[in-house]
Length: 352
Image (cartoon, rainbow, N blue to C red; front, side, top):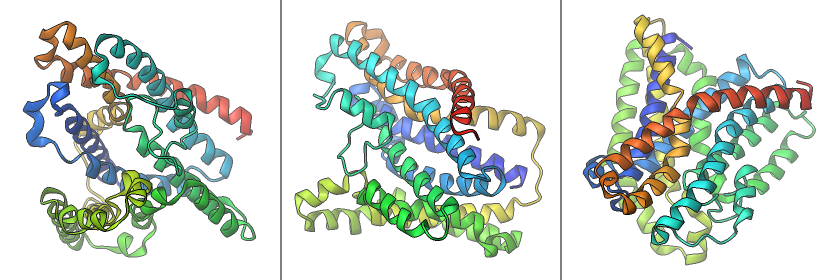
């Protein structure tokens, strides 16, 4: 992975997280109507995350995670280091927010069952949206965990057990997670494809441009939703629609992922061998570390500060958005420290 391409992936990750944040912050109940011009692309940004995740995990498997124990330690410590604090924060802030403005919060059945499901990342395994409290973005972590599990089995299980275990894991994660697996696996393909590695820079630039144009047409014009997703949902019975959950746009999502994958593959060729200014090499990775915390902490913070704004109206004048983003990013350091603790503990437990 060239330094320039690594920096580019960091930029894409951070941009995707900020798109999700803007999408949610633009809701009228969060006093963010001024952001509505940039809203509407939160779900598509998660599709970008899936493609990038597949690429990074395939890269790590080849260069760092050389056995299943190390792979498990790295993946679990990465997820739990942000998910556990986010779940705790959501539980605390939801309790405080409900006391200030109960109407802002929807009734949440399941209680601690939702918390446990989110801790174990099974909140989307056959169950419809069992994320802890108000933290809606937790849905995608369940998908990520499912993909990590499937990829780990395919990578490390012996030949005799590989496919039976993969089938068993597929049954465990359920249909909605599997429906977006192609988007994640496109990232794996980018890393492993000999054609991508052999692609010339000039051709890479063309492929990157075509892939970007393809994805933007589908996203900005909502072409996939208008002509595929919405029509499909009209044909399906309601129980089937509920089963799809966050994967109800799986056809258009995978088509968007195809454009994103082509763009990333092209950029990997175009940026191969290129150098980056020293300031970019320092600041971009530093800022991109906040990607995961911004994604997982912002929603309960938006909820809480909006409830607080009902008591203190000046907070509604941009304060809800600014504080939610700033505090989400501020969790980056503590989450990194927790990851180191979890990594050491899991390594001792698994003797990795």
